[in-house]
Image (tube, rainbow over all chains, first blue to last red; front, top):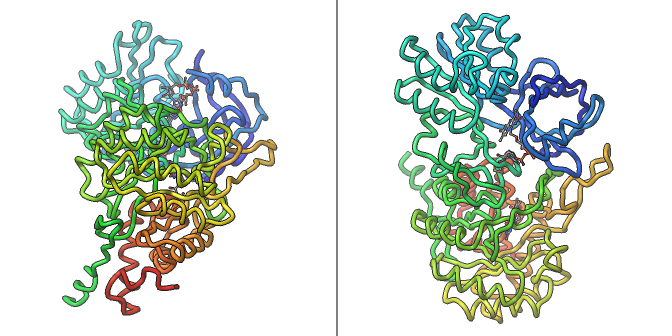
Length: 261
Length: 312
Ligand SMILES: Cc1cc2nc3c(=O)[nH]c(=O)nc-3n(C[C@H](O)[C@H](O)[C@H](O)COP(=O)(O)OP(=O)(O)OC[C@H]3O[C@@H](n4cnc5c(N)ncnc54)[C@H](O)[C@@H]3O)c2cc1C
Ligand SMILES: Cc1cc2nc3c(=O)[nH]c(=O)nc-3n(C[C@H](O)[C@H](O)[C@H](O)COP(=O)(O)O)c2cc1C
Ligand code: FES
């Protein structure tokens, strides 16, 4: 039923100065890349991806505006409305040599994917980026696993000074990846997609668009000119599906008006 | 095999006020109709005609989420007539008309009787195949007052105002939330409407979350759509068909070919589909057409016309 079910927040972890993880008293079978609509009564209802799928669901959130600020004020034991999982388009693990490129909190939906990749015998490179070292998510968790970890920060406080894309660009010249997976700010993802298309490496990316129904009915989140719905046909698309579309150029706000990126 | 193929291709075209539709399924207003890309995708997936989200005079963000909530046998919605600026909407409509290979119905609303006429005039410049006047949205009462479509006289004045501002065929979309829909239908026909859409969503209704004791929709109330309102829609179409000569688009709860046929038999010349997409996704249009053809084959109907109004 596409109606909010109240679930209890079992715990809250502070990940970085601006990012928190919420552990929900909810267990479902979902796929990497899928999301839920979270409702704070009398405030709003907004989409968030799952950052952990095994056991109790987790979502990892960056504070950016009124809704996320309100979410950050909730306490362990509080209730939150949940409907989902949504998104037919999810991450699909394939290939032997894999690269995951994440910008900021974009790493959240990629975590269940990383878990799945590591279950098989695969070589995994993860590039994470943030404005500064303190904002890099889950360094310790990633370092302790069988991952080739690379970092980039805008201010150069950790790893390469620059963006995830700069690191990726260098890397694809040396290593032949079978797959690239990415999530992060859209302009970063656009560069990742362009690199992947140029190098002919299959690539999947998780998109964001303003959502209302979240279930493919209202038409709020459609991509030009294919009409694919981010909530239903996505949120994960291949770079090929996004080639020549509005991706990387503009999106739409709540009224449906176009906004340049 | 050859015979089978011929049967499959059975003609299920219909016509509305002189405009031919390749099949009787129409995308209802407000569902997947915000952007050209989405409307064209629905046309390509098999709809016989497409209706835009209702176009309004000024930019509106609509209501805060949640704007929809599912209930057993349907859903409530209070999107709140969100739309971009009129210029942006007209640009989008122009683009849709350029790309669509099926008739395009431009749905519109105004805040006053006069504004309906002004909107019709502006939209007509872009030349959609039809105008559809939404005089029946049940979710905006707090802001706009009672829907225009709840009184015969106001319904007629809106219809007349639009007809005086356009040469395009006009569909008037009625609300079921009236004690006598026949009166309204008669009034809009006399005022010059070329067709009637029936029905808009019912109610409004309310869903309260009991853990928090708070209504789920931010607008508290929303229009009911889906299978729950199908019997009401069928009854409305049946009554309207008995009252007026102009063609009817039957809308409300259609999910299968059988539902569509029921609506045709009640007197609809075509059917609108909205909430059904929640269950069957956008392939619903081609699938319903296929189901109508199969029914016609097995029951020995040769033309869609034979179904229209058959229950009378
Ligand atoms: C499929 C999907 C998955 C997401 N997963 C995560 C996640 O795991 N972690 C996370 O921190 N954020 C995630 N987001 C983004 C999150 O939904 C927004 O950060 C949040 O809605 C911002 O609300 P706000 O009121 O705090 O900020 P605002 O100031 O209202 O908005 C900040 C930004 O969020 C966008 N936004 C606002 N409302 C919506 C909406 N209804 N639908 C989509 N975008 C909106 C705005 O366009 C703007 O760019 C996801 C978005 C989508 C579409
Ligand atoms: C999410 C949603 C938005 C709608 N928006 C509009 C609208 O803008 N204009 C309009 O005339 N009808 C609107 N409607 C009503 C539908 O066009 C239709 O009349 C009604 O939903 C009944 O049909 P259904 O049961 O097939 O959905 C909307 C319905 C839904 C579910
Ligand atoms: S948010 Fe409604 S269709 Fe995607």
